[in-house]
Amino acid sequence: MSLEGESFELREIQRLEGHTDRVWSVAWKPSTGVDGVPAVLASCSGDKTVRIWEKSPSTGSFQCKAVLDETHTRTVRSCAWSPSGKNIATASFDATTAIWENVGDEYECVSTLEGHENEVKSVSWNASGSLLATCGRDKSVWIWEVLPGNEFECVSVLQGHTQDVKMVQWHPHVDILFSCSYDNSIKVWLEDGDDDWHCVQTLTEANNGHTSTVWALSFNASGDKMVTCSDDLSLKIWGVDVMNTKSGEGYAPWKHICSISGYHDRTIFSVDWSSEGIIATGAADDAIRLFVENKDNLVDEPMYKLLLKKDKAHEMDVNSVQWSPEGDKLLASASDDGTIKIWELVSV
Image 1 (cartoon, rainbow, N blue to C red):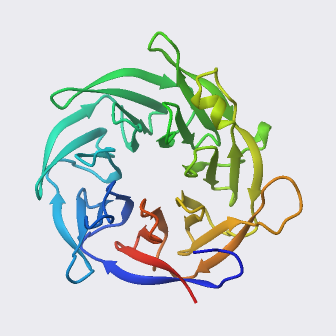
Image 2 (image 1 turned 30 degrees about the horizontal axis):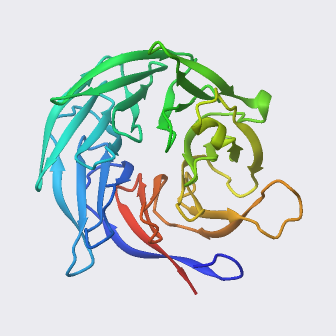
């Protein structure tokens, strides 16, 4: 589907209800929703649970297949599937990260990672599933090595942020870790030859970065661009020489390409870049916005334009937006109103 010269709408397919508190985050299970495998989505909430939703092949609607509970004692803030889809990691305000194993329709908590002093805000697996990163209110980022037998060993505690760390995210192709924080910065972490992780770059206002809390980040499909979102009501697009990064020829620094501003009037909590190049945002004004690269501009650097704005997407803040990884233009959103919505991008 070409995005040029067409009109689009974000059509609500289904509203998923069951959580009894705000829903913080959603995550699509890898390799589902394609080749006859039903799409699977996880959601996590202030009600201390994680719900697993599966699309029924017969009805086409999502149904709750499992509730992961009685493990976390406080809000579950973040959930992330391992690349294989066998495990799901859940990060909680109870200072722990739980690892759940999926066997058939059952989910069993097989490991609990402890070490953060207080609220764990985000969890992310690297591309191979060999490493897990967590971050929290204690200003630290932890890197865990995944060992046989559902064992996890902390191999590094990264101190560098001066405030809460809101999100950790691995690069989609190489083992480089990114963290964004209440201290207005994005940090880039790399391992040297001695299993020692250190910060190789900090993106701040000084290099055209954000002027307020950075809430989230996402990468495009090829991994040569990154988008970040902030309390400063802007999105920032960053670029890198990805071939240099992949070849291991040392570290290639990220550079600011452009800013997208003037479209949001409340905090942007979530951003996700689809495999087809569409950037979605969820914000405190209850709306979802979609942006695409503007191919009409005549300057060398890319610019981005608003594809559409979905007003009143939810009744309260939109905390999380996530595109289905299979490129079928399905978007999941989660809100303070306690619901998850499944949307489809259609041309009109």
